[in-house]
Each structure stands twice: as C-alpha cells, then as structure tokens.
Image (cartoon, rainbow, N blue to C red; front, side, top):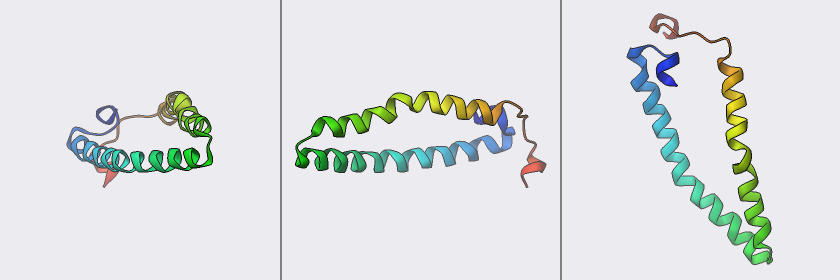
Length: 84
C-alpha cells in the first residue's frame, strides 16, 4: 500500500518504518501472550486465556479492513513536495 500513496522517492523510507514497527511487535507479542497464558494457567482457567487471545485475532482483519477503507476512500497520491 505504501507504493500506492507515497512517491517513489519515499516508498523505501515508509517500508523501513513499517518493517521496524513489525519487528518490535514480533519481539513483544510472545512476551505478552506468555504472560497472559501463564496468568490464566495459574488461576486454573486456561480456556479464558485462549479466549482472550483469539477473540481479538478473529476480528482484527475485519477491523483493519474497515480502518483502511475509511482512511483511503478519498485519498490521492502525495507528492514529495507536500511531505516536506
């Protein structure tokens, strides 16, 4: 999507920022999930931990689709001069 909304000169920068955000998320996500499941396992209700884990995952694609739709419904490609 970055190539659809940013000029050619800025696509690599946008993709780099996106990659860095993704690598931070990939590092933190297992820690959060491990803490969540360990907490619910200690309580004795591991099923509730998995329900809390998979419920947001089941609707995340639909929510992101709606957000992208509303952010891009009237969008146009940015020129490099507009960014600076």
